[in-house]
Length: 328
Ligand code: G3H
Ligand code: 13P
Ligand code: NA
Ligand code: ZN
Image (tube, rainbow, N blue to C red; front, side, top):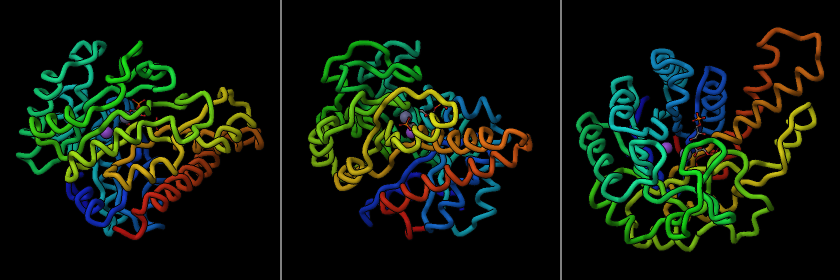
């Protein structure tokens, strides 16, 4: 059944687990996520970015989600707009059947300048008023994603502000988070603790000191009833990079967020954990491997099927390690 983010995260908080939120753009990714959810009996958050909606078309995406729900009626599914950048984008998601939206007001309407508190709180509140009227949920974001290693806003996939940032911009302040939640009444709050989007998060193996976990603990202590969200939470496993590179890929050495750090986050109020990059790596590695080893093959099903399997294995692992397995 289609369910709101609020309903899913309330249950996760009561039971003390976290939910991965997986990005979806096409049928193969939807099938991979749902097979893993079925195998582990886990609830599902599927999220579509603006890019996904452009790529797949809203009508196709809408039917894809309906298909997922019809195929697995016993699995609760939340369909979430990832990084909506305006109230208009969030509204069109709601009218296309999404049960949850993220209003990412971290950039001004120009899409470049870091937003101030009042702009962000204003647009987010507007979306909350709208979404709650139709029983949908809203995720807001306070703070700016970026690397504490380099002191820069995130760069390579162009989501955030690409430039120098002070540490107090890169790490969400607990008092400001509390003020934001009070001003907006969001259902879930994304916080900045040193993660960034994409494969190139850290240039060395994280040693347990690379994320601002103390800041996260402070936010949770101040807002014990707010569901926290971690973006940029792919682990970028070395073994997935190696498969891509072994079969003709060229991924430069890089490290992501260790699953152990996410598990610590879940103990301190993190309920939604956004993962896209790991799924891309898994699917691409399997497709590369098949095409590389069976050069006579040209039936898309022959390489997409192993792509689905490899992606599904990552989904299963995260459902299990975040504790959502068995909770559907
Ligand atoms: O927010 C980041 C997700 O990985 C979605 O990426 O905007 O390329 O679809 P995308
Ligand atoms: P990754 O790039 O780490 O997978 O993050 C995805 C994300 O935050 C989507 O909103
Ligand atoms: Na999101
Ligand atoms: Zn994100």
